Image (cartoon, rainbow, N blue to C red):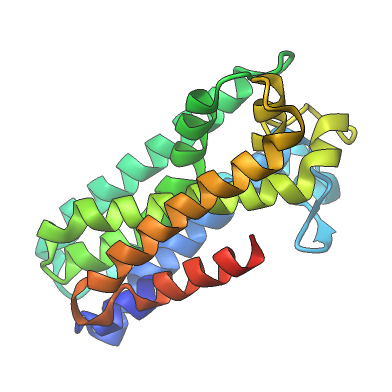
Length: 238
């Protein structure tokens, strides 16, 4: 998303690559730490870092990836914008960490509020998915679009989390050897939706995806088309 939007907005390849690398490093840092918290033993078909090398190495690996994300931004050509980019990365990192802390606070009891679930999902998934587009628009001097960019990307992130929850509902309900995860379907069931939980979750996600596609369509220079296509593909999966 960062590279595609950056290229569409006229960024030099060096700058588009720098923000793309920063986002990817930050994303992987979050995955390493998330697997450690959730005691997930696999990631992308391979043993997760903590499972293969222990908790201490996982903490250090995540910290190193996070530091490397900031270092990647040193490659941008317009150094006058570096303070704004660094501040944005920090703000989104804070939001992801807050989302993780919200989820960790639920351990040991069932969440029954979808408002609580959305707050957590928007912080954890939405922040990471809005960051690549926000960085591209900021670097391209299109700050006026940042509000719409954030709304579109966060809607996609929330819908993606719901799709992931649908696929993982059985293992999340069982705990699967680790802490019980906050799952949209389990939250809806606890809130009294019963057998309709899947339908309610799908309708909620599709509503967000429709809004994402509408916003992405009107972003300048076709910079939102990649996000629109991702949202369309997710709609088809739902």
